[in-house]
Image 1 (cartoon, helix red, strand yellow):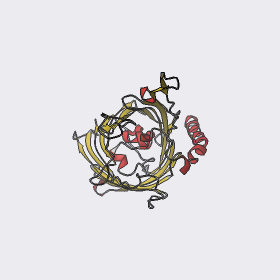
Image 2 (tube, one colour):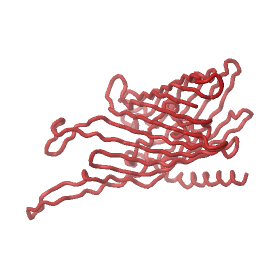
Image 3 (cartoon, rainbow, N blue to C red):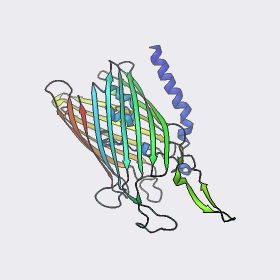
Image 4 (tube, rainbow, N blue to C red):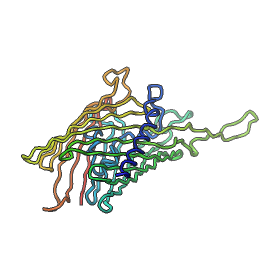
Length: 356
């Protein structure tokens, strides 16, 4: 019991000490952080209800919402998700796609170790220069983003679960690269006769600032004496998009057809963006079909002149699970999610989850 109290105290103090920095986010700082891909949910399940499942995230999806939920992996879990990011059937397209692979393995009765890779590509972009500003006249380049995440979660009691993630961030083109590291930490608490009441808190993307380097940061010029010289530009440092998630949920159970309805709410305090509020639900039937939907609100999103993000509004999706054995928890699930956005017509994610 003393150990649990100590852990809760450390997390509470960390949150309180971080709050001034988190709440300092305002419009003047908007768009200034680096590694903004850390705010993109790469998983089909949790993104289908807006990532508001801070209190009830389970499995590899918990890497994004709240790493504490990784503790609920029963044996071994593998997840793959492909996302067409901000490019629906009509309108402008971002041209970005995201592939994510995750694996988690239970270690003993109370601990789970997991890892996942998120790779984001943007296709071939036209290279332009001051001398050749016309598209197609100077070849192409292909920027890429990759995040490697290693996480550990532990069940301290049947009611208290916690975890942490170490992230390695890489952003690169053929001649410029930025690398950084960050950590997440989270905790979940369950109570009630059937553990139907859940609370969660997650502190995300804590780490040192990043900066770009490489041959692309230099150029050759001629000085006043007529000599060639190489000038190297210094990249400004970019802070990471730190945020704090606080969530709660309640499960309603119905015996007929083994139904469950979960109502969840979440608040996200962003250091470099406006705060988000989310409300949604997850409905499960026979533990084989699951539907999810949520609405994420950010101040000013209904006014074009005051809108600060494209990623707000309605999210929805579903999962269908097929058992691999007559007995046991082995199963394969097909997952889909849709996230609405302004101007860019939404993001679609399709994935599969294998439990064995």
